[in-house]
Image 1 (tube, rainbow, N blue to C red):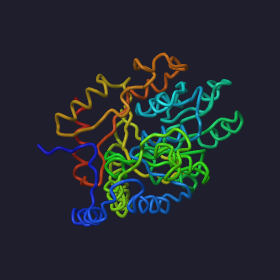
Image 2 (cartoon, rainbow, N blue to C red; image 1 turned 90 degrees about the vertical axis):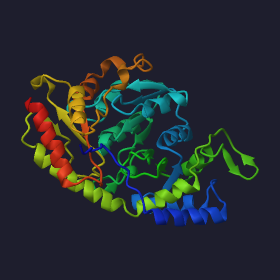
Image 3 (cartoon, rainbow, N blue to C red; image 1 turned 45 degrees about the horizontal axis):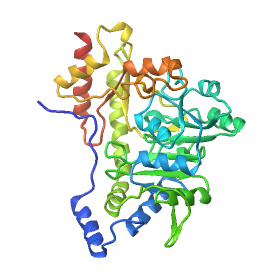
Image 4 (tube, one colour; image 1 turned 135 degrees about the vertical axis):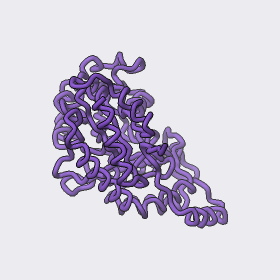
Length: 369
């Protein structure tokens, strides 16, 4: 039986990797702001349209570094409909997680819910561009200015996304990207922060390197979040082919939408007209009221057909033990509902059109039984 996996990392040609490794072996410069990292940061700046960018060893550490660089303290409002990393980063820097619900029928944090949770202890909002769909940026920006609090975007899913033809990282105080191997763009493990001025960029780069600002200067606290030269080289090579990966995913996404259009129990993600999307995921949402099965049942049935889908996100973070006592945790019904009805279908550049048809036909077969 053929297996169709949910995600497959695209990789550069092995000969190109060997060539880069040969350079690194000759230079023996393995980490600490080497030439490959600097080249990677420069190319990312150009691709993403960012003036101030810093690469770290993963997306999670990037978010923690960014929160520290902005001196975030007290209460931080975020969404429970996200990977656990978002909330853990807030807690790991010593701040308190406060949950605001997502919009009804949407996937992103609800600005109205955010404003209700603001107190005199609120220092920041961490909003997630879920599945690469931008948050309500104008409303969140207005709230952040009204109350004088920081606005940070977890853009782990949003590489290359544009809103009103502007890079998604143009907004807010800071945007984080993840370059994990499961993401649209990756360097095996990595992440980046895009900020809006050089002073904040300097602070980010010091914090990612133990607070060191020069050979004999340690200006403050920091951590070790540096990306090594080998992974930077992988990133550089992968960046050269990212557009073809996005294009192929767009074709697969369009085929999915056509094939699933006639299934009443399923709805697909709606991409706003003013968004240039990256097709990083293909989530579908089930009308569970019309079904006699759960998304877990559907996921298992697809697996029996050799199709590996994933309930992403299967758990609203406000319902798990370590976060259920957070402020706002009992007021996130929309997030809890969405977590019960979502399933992400396989999508990656290695798939064929026939693979999509197999997934859709398998889905129809399961729902008809």
